[in-house]
Image (cartoon, rainbow, N blue to C red; front, side, top):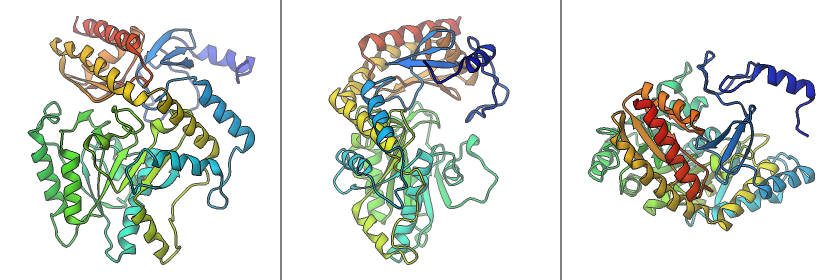
Length: 439
C-alpha cells in the first residue's frame, strides 16, 4: 500500500499523463511556470530504472544524486531503523553517535588533515559554510580577508552567497552581494579546455586574479574539479595541482566544490584525487546519501578548525541548521558508503564510465554534435546549440532514456551501479535519439 489515499490517487491520475506535467500547487525548483511537455511524472524506481505513473520504463541517466541506484534495501533499512530509533535531534544542543560515525567514515576517504566535518542539508549551504569558515579563519589569525577567486561559469548553489559566486545568468539576484568575487574566464572553447596546452593559460589567469592587488589577497580560490552546470567542462591535467601550488605560494585557502563530483562520480572518490592534492576545505553532497536524504558535508583542515577557539564572539563555528547532521540522513549516508565500498562502485564508475564515453565517441560524426567528453560515470555531448540539445534530450526520453540538458549540452549521468548491459543500452538509445534529431 502506498502513501497516497484512494482519493489522492484519483486526483493524481486525473492530472497526470505520459509526458504531461502534473497540475498541482508545488513550485518546482529551477523550472519555468509555463513548460513544454516532456516532464516525466515519476512513480517508482529500482536500480538504474524509473517508471512513470503510466507504467512507462526509463533508464535514468539524469540524476546527479543516485550514486548507488534506486531502492537499495540496505539503505532503505538503515534509514527506516534510524527513524524508528531517533528521527532527529538538534546537534547544537545534543550529540548522536551516528553523526560521529559518518564523519569518521567520510574523513577516512579524505587526505590526512581533512579530519573535521560540518554537516549541512544541501550543497548550497555547504558552500556558504565553507566561505564563512574561510573568512573566519583569516579573521582569527589577524589577517581579515573577504575576496574569493572562482570560475565565472562555476555553479555553487542557490543561496544568495552561493549565487554571488557565479556569473551564470540563472544565478543572478537582486540583493547586495555578500562578498567580493573575482571571476576567471576559461580561455578558448569548452571543447579545447581539457587540452594540456590550456593548463598554463588557466593558471596564468588565476595567478593574475589572485595577485591583482597584493594588498588585497583573496581568502580562497573556489573551484569545481569539473564545471558542471556551466557547460560540462572537463579541466586540463595538472590544473588543480598548479592551483594548489599557486594558493600555497600566496597563502590562500583552496576550497574544492565536490557537491556533484564527490563520492565516486569521476572514477575517484573525490575529483581532486585525480591530481593527488590536498585542499583546505572540501564540500560534498549529492552522492553522499545517494539521494535517499538531504545532507552535505564540509570537511576542513584541522589547523583551520583549531583557530575557532579564538573566535572573539563565540569560541566555535557560528554556522548550522536545526537539522544539520540529521540522524536519518547520516544513517542513509553510512549505508550508501557501505554499498560504494563493498560493491566497488568507484572503480566501476571508472571502468563503465570509459565504456560509456567510448560508446558515445562515434556521435562526433553527427553534424549537430560539436564534442563528446567526460570523466568517470559522466558523459557530455556538446551540441551546436540550445535547440539541438533540447531536441536530443526529448528524443532520448522518447527512446526510454532520461538525460540532463544544460544549455547546448546534454549530460548522461547514470548511477554508479550501471553495468555493461546498462551502459550499452544507454549508448544504443542515445544513438537512436541522435539519428532522430539529425533526421
